[in-house]
Image 1: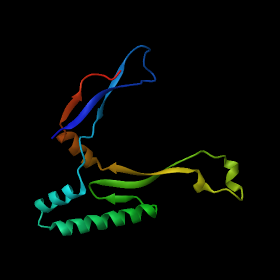
Image 2: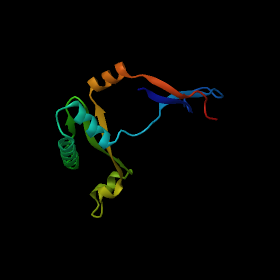
Image 3: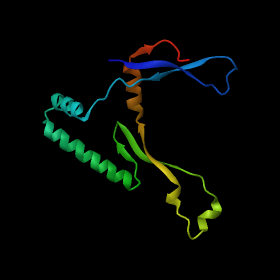
Length: 138
């Protein structure tokens, strides 16, 4: 198994004019589905597939509960999940107004995953890469 990547052109705001800059970007090669995950866990443990599905479904429900209550959800050695907001700017003077609704300025909600250092270290030590394309896009 290898992480597949492409070489793509990019803009370097501090770069020289007329110089082509490029960087490597990981490319998704497929999805590791919930069913594949449950089967893999079943085969590597003594737990049945139904039990794995039940535990993962309950974990998903309680992760959502924690996120909706504004908590950071820590998944031991895996990492942590936390809600992030993207909002429009508003004038500070509007905060005291009677008709001010701060939630109306929220554009979107995101879930940010912050991996634990162990996970990053394991990824760096075990990762193998494979180039998908060697030419730059015009």
